[in-house]
Image 1 (cartoon, rainbow, N blue to C red):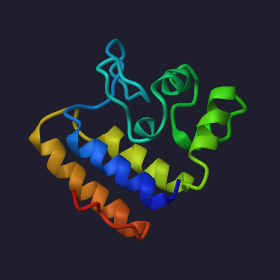
Image 2: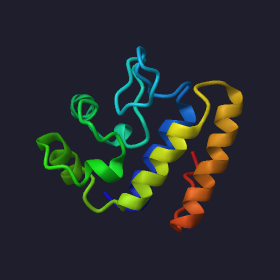
Image 3: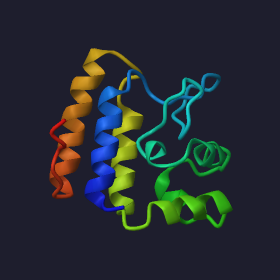
Image 4: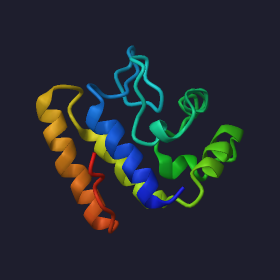
Length: 126
C-alpha cells in the first residue's frame, strides 16, 4: 500500500464517520471502537487485528510499529510501504477531533487537507 492509497482510504472513511472510534467504558480512542467504528489506522486493518492491537499498552501507531507483539508485526506487514509519520499524523487527526457532529466533519476536512499538503498527497475527489 502506498501513502496515497492509505490516505485516500482514511480520508473517505473519516469523512463519512459520524463519531470517533471510542471505548464505551473509558471514552478513549481505540483501533476498533465499541460503536463499530475504527480509527484512522484501524480502518486500514482487519477488525479482528484492531481488537488485538487495542489490548496492547501502546495505543499510538509509532509505538505499535516498535512492538514485538504478533498483532503489531502483522499490522506492520499489512501497512508496509506506508509512512509511519503519515499514519501517526492521521491517527492524531482522528484522536483530537470532537466525538461527533457537523463541526467535526468540517474540522476533519481542514486537518486532513493539512496532512495531505505536508505529505505531498492529493485529496480524493469522491
